[in-house]
Length: 306
Length: 325
Image 1 (tube, each protein chain N blue to C red):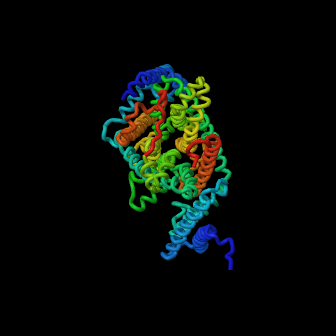
Image 2 (cartoon, chains in turn orange, brown; image 1 turned 45 degrees about the horizontal axis):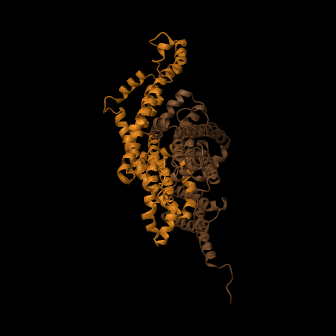
Image 3 (cartoon, chains in turn cyan, orange; image 1 turned 90 degrees about the vertical axis):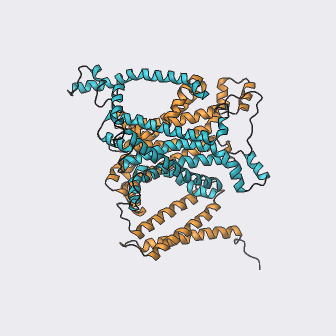
């Protein structure tokens, strides 16, 4: 809590500066476009380029009033199938289910990577490779294949979200499982700890901070996966479906509104991970701040030993 | 009688592993050769045979991989991975032929390779546009800006408090939602995709570099103070080396983000070239053999790029804990 209040003033200053710069930038970007539209004789309810800059149908940067009106159009009525709220809820569901799937798969891969060099040697190059495969190409095939077995609707999208999200989890957890320093590992050996005990008492606890960092990255990745899956397959709900529809219709203001809403959705989902992290690791909250920078003199660093 | 030297236990283990691999592959290839021109489904017994061959090769590969655990030579050490790939490809070919899956749904690997060879000129031109112009330019701009901003943010507390929360927030924004807007704004040429890639790569680099610059051991910081090290020296000898593993982590993730960003960006408008454009067009026409060819090209480049960064990381941060075993 103290951290937020410390950050509040600088954050507000930055926000005010950014907002103050938005108007001049918007005019700078839109006036040439407005002039071109006037020159070609487009039917606009305004006379000069400066006036038209805020009323273009496809502006380079939309004016705040346009955004506000666009937001109103897409938000209400609240339960219509074209409202942002319902579509965002569907996408959020797909993303969260995808993240949970990815966590299970990623965890097993991470243990495999750390426990067996043979496993790492034979599979890690292809795990990396699987991430460079553009999922949009696989999405339609996956949907058709799953459709043959009666799996339809939001589940294929969750699977595609999991496919893109498991990589950061696998890599992050593997890094965390390897993070205990050699001294602690040696200590476990002197205690004659078994392989499993080393994992349970040392490696798993050591990987928790890495796990949640990975979850935050993976949540953002899963959201991207879910949206791309919605764009590239036939879908009736979701942010991706709205994005594809409005991109085809060249509705620039709506695209901006959807972009901002999906940004808010991404922020909320990552905040959810943060909240779970605080619940799951109360001992980390007890630290003065999560910024271990300024060392006080005469305070030696403690080596955590299970 | 004295036993001959080569039949040591290690040699026997190696022989068993390789033997299982060879027999397994022989079974699978024998089926594929026999079923090359068939147009009906295989019998249940033959499907069972494929399963047995697959299982045998998996177990054999696991044994062989154990032999290569301590190999440091990069090409020889790649053998298990190559075997895994070969296994997946051969099994896929056998299964697709056994079940007679129509090529409009999933083309067989042999067909994909043939197509890849046919259309290589087009795909190479696509790859140049997507990788060199869009992904690489965007990646370099994004990561150098990211490191620069992280240096500033770590130096000035006001910026840290005012900007870093926004950077954290922005990195959770889905880039696909950004892509159509940016393509409309900048145009359909490669520059718009380079901007998308730069934005995608920028935020992870800022956050990771900042963490690396600030999560310094208090002991080392005290040591620098007792040496009366200046700010510049502190950065040169303590903070920057400490940040390198974090930076490389972000750079490695950035390679895949850059490829995805460039390819996804092309879905919302391209100038008639590019891997993403090709994939979208051909997927719409059910030309999945060309789609898979484009995927292979993208993957090969992505792997090469990732390994290049990983190689640089090993050269520059070989002293880090995660490499000491």
